[in-house]
Image (cartoon, rainbow, N blue to C red; front, side, top):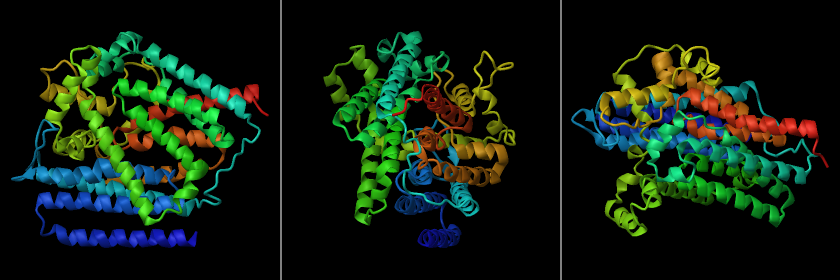
Length: 483
């Protein structure tokens, strides 16, 4: 424990030293150089912290996972953005308008402030609420029957798949919808009554993997692989990377809690490099898929053949497909840049408080149910720049922008310091038995979402993912499926 504290103090010293050097450099740098340095500083701090957190607390550590996504959505994006600042303005094909170079610098500083807030919040939480006995999974539900767990995991998975197909009945059915343009399909689903199928599928996958890890039986492994493979195929057909990434991270985190953390903690720097290399390859694969998934409706409707698609890819593939600033990683940053130049009313925390009543369905909501900040932003940009199009394009939403809208320039540090403490609080759950682990796994997808969405949908999705876990626990308490 003393070694961990000394490492954290060393990291703090390094961060302060880098910040001082940055402050000295800022007096002589151009805006583009300044943006690059801010992005580089964010990236260096994130990488250092990720390595140290993984070495100390394992691959399932929530702060390390959050910083991994923060690195892509902020550090890498800013470094990429810096190359598009010319003559005092920032302009890139991804965004429909240009911004002053000073706006990008301020946005970068707010991201850096949010990063420092996350670090400080987590550090203060560990001081106020020290964690003891961390690092080994303790199965506090030893009386659970593996056979019963596997049975209910399969039932939840099937229930999720059924709800998935039912949710698509309003869009010509699941397979019929594959011939519809993806953005148009998403716009229809946004206003349709979709069922909370993801949580049931994630519980089914997580529990089946848990049973395999306990029993080490090959038939259980084959069942898990079949369930995961079918789910992955459905998501790839829909061009949906989000739920597939959720599934992968849930399984990786569960492996980390059960065994992987103790393995990863012994990683050498060489193996840590391989770890980051795998992440980079995954990033390239998903970026490529993002650029070609529009071909799926064309192939399904037989407007294009496989040969046509391959020829198109060969003729159009460019390096920009893989540049963070020109992919979905850069899109949420648009909201921060936009509201820095186009001031809106200060929300004073209302967007966060609003997330609780927003859980109510439209039929039960008193009056007209308002939209998310992200949806309001998408509508505003559509009306301002794309009114000639029928389909509204989503941009995501930077949580740094939401913090700024609520509390102005102190917002990012203040909000993210609370978030940092929350990450440490959730870290305590992962080693305390199956039920707490499942609650923790329900939270894992939001480590990604709190880099690309406003808080209300993040909170709503966490609650919806948590519901199947609570339902499974209630079934356990009522039926007592024990050995």
